[in-house]
Amino acid sequence: MRTHVIITSLLILFIFNSCQKEFEDPNDTSVSTTADFRAKISGVQFVASISGAARRSDSVISIAGKSDDGQQIVFTVADSGVHVYQLTFNSLSNFGAYATATSLAYSSNEGTTPEESGGNLAIVSIDSVNKLMSGTFNFKAFRQLDGTQKIITEGVFNNISY
Image (cartoon, rainbow, N blue to C red; front, top):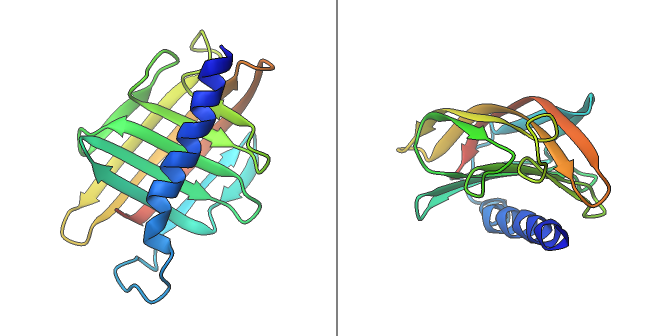
């Protein structure tokens, strides 16, 4: 169990850092200025200050958003293009995660039942010419370490660069 928590925390950092490169250069005109990444975390509004980032490579799609206060939401799914991806509690290939500013990680695949964790990520458009991705998401994220849960609802990302 403890190993799974550490792996989830490391994956969140890796995914976010690998996606974040697209937002480091303010003079880069390829980054969409209309990007939007937001959700509610257990009823509290989350808005990514780094509007969101995505990476599409090696048959994997990774999507991430980080707020001003350091909260992060990330996804990794096996690339099936425009598709509704199931984030099941026992999946190693499709999962969503949430991390607090203090690096407490919760994951859609860390629970042992659908009541504890799981959800979906719907990628509704992929613009391969302009390299933009949009979609919606909701999931239950669980942390085995202390048995707590975060419920992510009303998630949306629009025009995220990849």
